[in-house]
Amino acid sequence: MIAHQPHEVNMQGPSLSTIQASCFLCPVLICSRDEIACNFVAMHFVRNFSMAKRAGVFEPEERIDYNSLTEETFNWQEWIERESRKRIGCAIFTQDVAGSIFQGSIPSMSPLDFDVELPCYESCWEATSASECLKRLKSTPQQPLVSTAMHQLRSTQNPTSSILEVSGFGMFTLLKGLHCLVWQVTHYDMEPALDLNGSSSATSLDEQLSQDLSGQLVSSLADVTIAAHTSQAIKLVNSALDSWRMIWDARQHREMDHEYATFVLDPLPFWWLAKLYLLLHCAGRSIKENSEFANPRSKGLNTAGKIVAMTKVVGWLQRFRRRPDEATDPRSMNCLKHLMKPVGGSPPNI
Image (cartoon, rainbow, N blue to C red; front, side, top):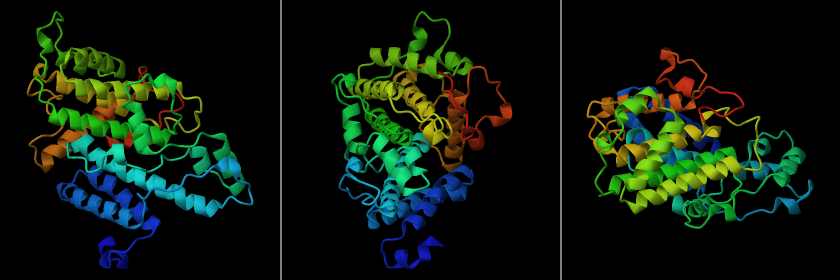
């Protein structure tokens, strides 16, 4: 039991491997769909955050110019520990935001002041020698801080003037940061929701989404609805989402051997999910109470209800991730193992 380890009893800094193992436990507990296990997740996350903080995972580190290093001056073991800290920090941050995505909980970390460097490219991380690692570090763009990249995404200036080059894991982390902002603007928004069912369309919003929950339809409906909404904060977050997508599509350095291999390296479904959350919030009056799209944030639900809601969101992500020509297997819907299944080397459901 981690709670009885000396570093927890004496509140000391644990090893990075201990934090890694503990971080893996959070999604296992959530995916068990067991009420007792799910009730334990919040407390377990707090312990993970405490361990990481005591181990200095969130402390800013001096940036290294890898182009100035040689094989003789490059310390591979030190780099592995440094990169492990970054990856653990970003993993804990994304797990914190996952609570708001799947269960509507309040995010405890802000991406705007999260001064941890984004993870490197997978080819660097998976290098099998010091020389190979240094070679790949020199040939790939250096990663910015999460806070720096988030402020750039939120800038009202034309993002094409300074395109970010970010790794796949890094883009996933930034998208989770945008999900944190989506939670904030929808939670505190006081503007009235729109009723789209009174428009000229003969098909209700519920019916449109039920018949075709594709990323293209969701993003199109979201942009039209948000443009008609009166909240400037929501418009700004939607603009930041669009900037993220532009950067994702415009990247010059891409690792096709890794992209779309796992949901962490395949962030587009979470981008469409963010658009869907904004759409459902802005057009809340168009959604029937008994609709599957009602109450996506699990407001007022007990643990059992939140588990059902989480399963529903996983099902949405699975539908976003499915390729247009892929047959639907009813057994795969709302199943985490199918959400995490590799989809190959091409983007799904564009």
